[in-house]
Amino acid sequence: MIYIQNVVKQYQTKKGVVTALDGVSIKIEKGKIFGIVGYSGAGKSTLLRMINKLEAPTSGSIFVEGEDITKVSEKKLRKKRQNIGMIFQSFNLFRSKTIENNIKYPLKLTKQYSKDEINTRVDELLEFVGLSDKKYDYPSQLSGGQKQRIGIARALATNPDILLCDEATSALDPETTDDILALLKKINKELGITIVIITHEMDVVKSICHEVCVMEKGKVVEQNNVFDLFTNPIHKTTKRFVHSVLNDDIPSVVKNDRHIYRFIFNQQQILQPVLSKVGRMFEVDFNVLYGSITELTDKLFGNLLIEVVGETGNQQKALQTLAAYGIEIKEVEGFENRLN
Ligand SMILES: Nc1ncnc2c1ncn2[C@@H]1O[C@H](COP(=O)(O)OP(=O)(O)OP(=O)(O)O)[C@@H](O)[C@H]1O
Ligand SMILES: [Mg+2]
Image 1 (cartoon, rainbow, N blue to C red):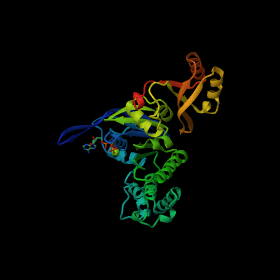
Image 2: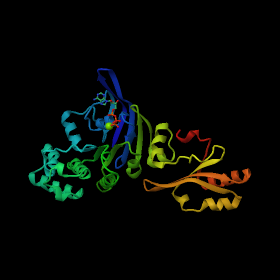
Image 3: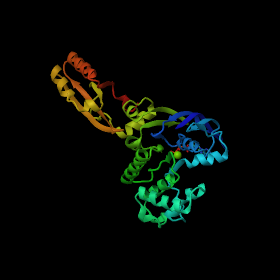
Image 4: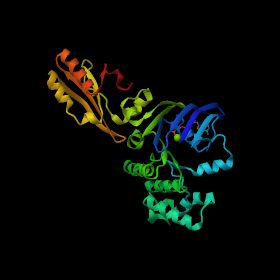
């Protein structure tokens, strides 16, 4: 659906050249919810603006549905843009227009629809986002979450195949964030729209994304499906982001001289009582220091920090047996590696 190939974006500023994107390549498959995470200034918004060519890259190619949009004509580009909706952190609604007219705006721009078609479409969209009763209100009369729903309705007006979201939930409280994320999920599932979502909140990634890439200083430092990225982060920045939601620090009361292991369970293993079984088999005890089960893209991920207590030979046998069940086991050496 979207293929970004070796894209560089530089800005000339008074202080010199700023490289916002430094050789970025990513592939976003059709029908997926793709997350882009990174700290402030990493280049996320710049990358997103490349996809609908709000800005052109300094070099590199951007293929949207097979066509390099850096090379298409203005006319074709306008057509392509109708196929890409976008929503923003600050909603970007027209304050002086009613909700109805905000949603009508992109439809009128296309000059392809009759008045009746436009009216029907507006009603459909308002119903879809659950705000039919706000049709004649102005944006200032709506809450943040309602404004974002209208932003979404407007972005979907021209029936796009792609929806770009730049920090769409960052201005919202947690509960409203969940509502908007549920709506995005519904859009992806029911309408089959590919969604690209920028966020600095891993909770957002955890609850709706399929794939995610992590950006730092204009580069993509890691890309993976959500399950593998959370269960096995490789880059230091990814580890920090993952850590921010899994909260799996070793408690500070635990001294450095103990043998601590991290056990990673997948869905099937969570449903089997393997720990107690293996413990009895080899006469070892498992002392649980931390445990969590997280739902990631409809799969369960169990993460336990465990001290193994017992005779050394038996400990090893127990660990080997657990590994044979498919549980991933990593020794946590010292505790200096809490973050890296
Ligand atoms: N129009 C511009 N002119 C000059 N520099 C720019 C311009 N737009 C972005 N930059 C620079 O490019 C870099 C990436 O900016 P970008 O807005 O893409 O970051 P971001 O990851 O979206 O950050 P945030 O999370 O704060 O929104 C920054 O160093 C920024 O200062
Ligand atoms: Mg940004």
